[in-house]
Amino acid sequence: HEMIESGDINLKDTTSK
Image (cartoon, rainbow, N blue to C red):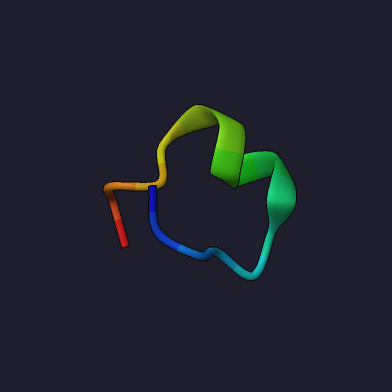
């Protein structure tokens, strides 16, 4: 999983970024 500014999105979809 990639690093996202929002940790909440991190759990949902990290591959999006």
